[in-house]
Image (cartoon, rainbow, N blue to C red; front, side):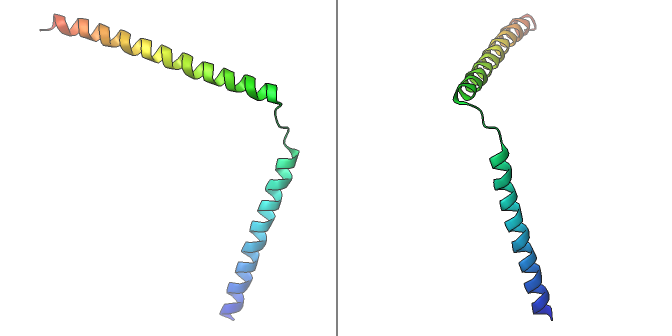
Length: 76
C-alpha cells in the first residue's frame, strides 16, 4: 500500500511538472516580443542611464572626498 501512495504521488508530481512546462510554452507564444528597433533603443537608453548615473555618482564621490579633505585639514 505504501508503494502505491509513493507511485501515485510521483505520478501527480510528474503531471504537475508537465502542466507547468506546457503552460510556460503557451504563455511564451502569447507574449508580444519587441521589434529590433524597440530592443536597440531600450538597450541604448539603459546603457545611457547606467553611464549617466555612474558619472553622477563618481562626481559626487569626488566632491565629497574633496570637501571632507578640506574639513579634515582645519581640525589638525
